[in-house]
Length: 586
Image 1 (cartoon, rainbow, N blue to C red):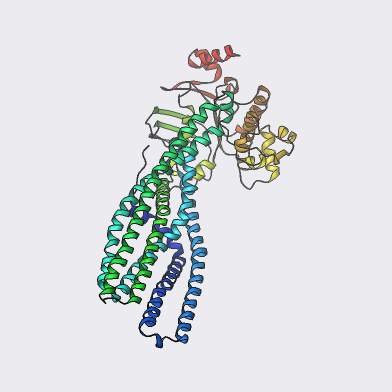
Image 2: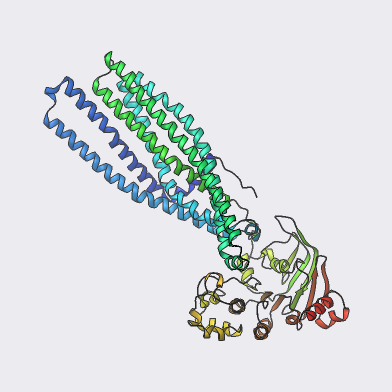
């Protein structure tokens, strides 16, 4: 999926509002920048005065005058030091605060993006955008206004001061600046493109490393270490080639500026020397010119050194905006209200759904009614839409056509938070957060006390195995729960739903990872949990749904069959074939 590219004007226009909370700090930072610049511009004037006085009025140049100039310069250096400290400390903190604000905004926006976005975006890319890319924004936010403000002051003030000394020589020197600006801007534009590619590739490299490390057991099981190493080497080499390209443009940029440095010095030496011979300029004035040109060149070099940082910052802002501009497809409608209570009557009315990204049609015109407290099981071939159907209830996706109602109210009329609070989900692919068993169960209802967490674990059939662990409920589960078995992780995830205690429950292969003994224990617990609650169960193990009030057979054509276990067997249709196949595999 090709991402949008932004022009410099739009990037700055979207970035500047982040300075608004720190207007006072920014103003003070720029004031300090002005002070340091003024201190730097005074020295050539002092040297001009001393040189001219020493050559043409040595008798009038007293020790007291020199002492006064020395004290003035000392005072200026003290002011420069204080202002520099503020810029280096508080100015950088301002940049860090802006980075923090942007990361907070990006994270908040990511929380609102739908499953479609995550299905099409690598986590490594997202991580790179909200960490590494925003690191550069700290320096950019601090230095960008500061560097350009200082450069502007130095250019204007230097021109004014030098023009008062000798306008013709000043014009000769400053005629070089626009040519230099055009050449440097051209090279800057190319550098920006190279840095953009560099950031995209580091995201790809992060994604490759993450994928390989998270799947390291599979890699080792299939002895594919060499294959993964080749993939990594390809991405790593690609990153090197892109960095070479960016450094090539950066080297050309720096070389061009050095050439223009030499041209400016050459203009001072040749033109200044001729003016000095013809009496059009005093020796002290030529000294001042040289010092001011040195200051100008130092300023230009500082901008050059900042150019790489500037481009990194602009690229970071661009990649941040690509997150912020990603469409929020699932959102609260205007006037959405809280779902404070529900009986759990669910109705699908002529529901059609196709995935927004690839427009893959899952079902059309589906109608389904689930009564309060009814236990409905959904079976069918892979790809028939079982999980998708259940994902529509908490609005992980929105229907393409038709509507879903709960207690007669379209679910889009409820706030997402309150809707999802009333739906408990145990997914086939169990996800545990890095932390303790207690923290993972308590995730079901933040604020629950320890006894409530333990009771939920008992009801899920997890308490016994937890207590056998060395640290009990304080056992660290590892990243994504790697230190626990599949069945243990499944029971902890079921305990989370017990603790949440919602009126609507979705069990997506909830017992798929359990052995027969654990499955029996959890099935009894799930039976108690589903009592009086609306329950939808997706299952391949038909033995776990025999007691369901109703079984639906969902195929690509929609609901092909429905009824109780015995009724469907008597029909000798699709369910009957599933049942025979399952028994044959035992």
